[in-house]
Amino acid sequence: MTDGIHYIIHNYEFKIMNDVYNKPITALTLIPRALYVEVAERLRLRIFSQELLPGSWIDELKIAEEYGISRTPLREALKVLATEGLITMKMRRGAYVTEVNEKDLRDVYHVLSLLESDAASVVATIATEEQLAQLQRLHAQLGKAIKDPEKFFAINEQFHMLVLDVANNKWRTQMVEDLRKVMKLNRHNSLFKSGRIQESYNEHHRILNALLERNSKQAALRTQKHFSNGLKAAA
View 1 (cartoon, one colour):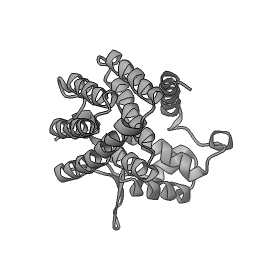
View 2: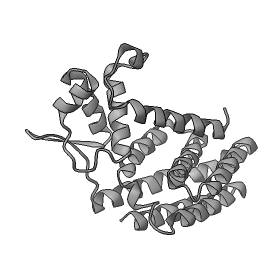
View 3: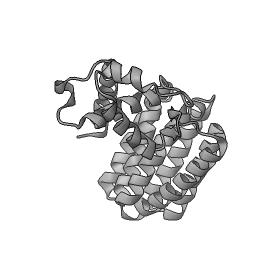
View 4: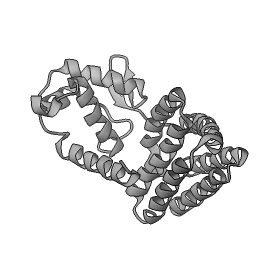
């Protein structure tokens, strides 16, 4: 499967989910995933698409009725989203979409910078020529998406996740995946700021050059700079 096909499939699935996440859940739509997993995915997409805004209350009765389910699988789904940091459970008040404050942003970007710069350093050392070629192809797609913020964001994330995949540390990848879910709560205030997309693309270009040059130190430093600039845009 090529990177381009992967993006198309991912994007297509997102569109399909957007079409159905407010419809009652049937046995056909659930196969082969458990009910609460399906519910969690639908709610996750609603959060990422800003339909459920940060700080908004999750009306369990209304959502259960929309999906045609009981509150039990819904509550299990909310627990999953709470572990991801997307939902905050408040005593005797219910569930709310997490609001990301300035300290949260600093903390998330700091840890991501540490984890992903370390991964970039590893990739500069161990990546095969084909893996580097994959990164080059993704970067080329990124350049073509500069005028399409949503597509740019998706390919941008693919690039970062491919670096993590090549670095081949499942624990690091898992931590980054969870942190990036929280980061998405604020993404409309970062990449979408005027000029940030072009800056982000230029930073990716410098990171890629360091990887191609097998310069692990520069790959790490340029990745750290990328996150530092991203935090400034997001704050």
